[in-house]
Image 1 (spheres, rainbow, N blue to C red):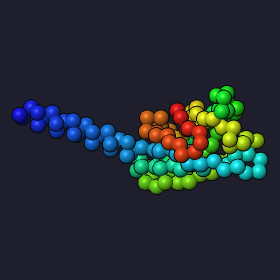
Image 2 (cartoon, helix red, strand yellow; image 1 turned 30 degrees about the horizontal axis):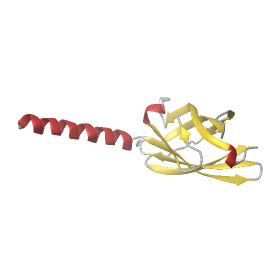
Image 3 (cartoon, one colour; image 1 turned 90 degrees about the vertical axis):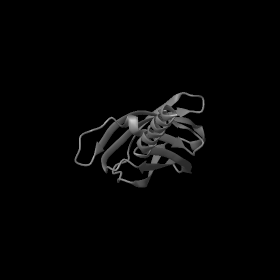
Image 4 (cartoon, rainbow, N blue to C red; image 1 turned 90 degrees about the horizontal axis):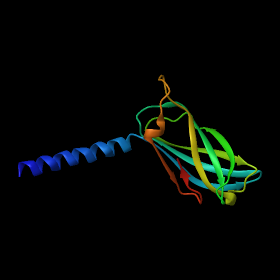
Length: 138
């Protein structure tokens, strides 16, 4: 019986640690598209639950057409990202109709720099979501 309780406690602590790691991450959500003159306006939500302010956060995105062909690369600078806040950022994809976007691929993170800190590899703490017609994937 003691071994069963010990195992249950270890499993519970493991789940708690995983939940804390996910809560302490950075979530990027492609919230919606909106047609604008000259392109497609994208609305991104950045939920920074890391406890750190980011003075640098730059993403390189590959915009894929509905038939899966890379249409263009787009670099967006989302900094600053304040700690423990959700921030809305708008970016335009020029000369592109929203309906022609099949997927947005996070190609690279050019900068992920906490305030007064060194550059980090943020892929491990990053979660991507999409509510738009096209998925946002890594």
